[in-house]
Length: 303
Image (cartoon, rainbow, N blue to C red; front, side):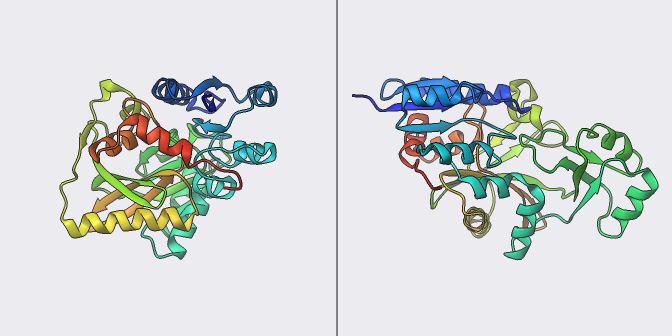
């Protein structure tokens, strides 16, 4: 008898469409081996879990409620095995302020940052930031993914960009680090590999990640020295361990003047046809089915 896999997809975050793409890609890859179905995390979720009685819940949700500890808490309460990181790890990774403080505490280089309120006037913002961070800066929501609501700002446009984030009471302002964009995938305790991105846009934002029209160039293997490659792989694994992550993670770096700056760690990396972790895995001899199958076999309770 085939094992039953319940795939959680969709949700209510700004990353809903990407979550659905991930869920469909996962289902298509494993449907010959497993009895699987996709369900929404809605008011019928408890009923669907009880009726289907899955061996494993594959969490294909992205963004708030899906990768911030919320759905993980629910799945723990149901006593079902599920994929990716657990409650605390998911919450810490999604909260950029908490994760960056932990990176600093553990001597992992990350851009300088400051949390500010979005209703400050220009004079207040510039006065506050100049004490700690030089322009240009990056502003972003504290707990969103897929580069949603991320803007590169100077003194002239920061207030206009802050207005775009007025739905958030507080946001993170981060030192802008120029340089190369390098992403590293970790699989359990294994350093899977790295990929470099050369977006035609200003940076690797939501469109660059998920639109084929953006024409972001993917470079693998990454053209850096062996010593540098080993260094960034070690930093990614260290960050994975610091946040006590499980399963697969993707760490986003900027490489500048010989230094790797960790921007953030993603506990629910996408699994679409443009996603980076499957591409890294394939380059290292692991096809999409094998990657998804590994994630399913890694599932557990009490993560």
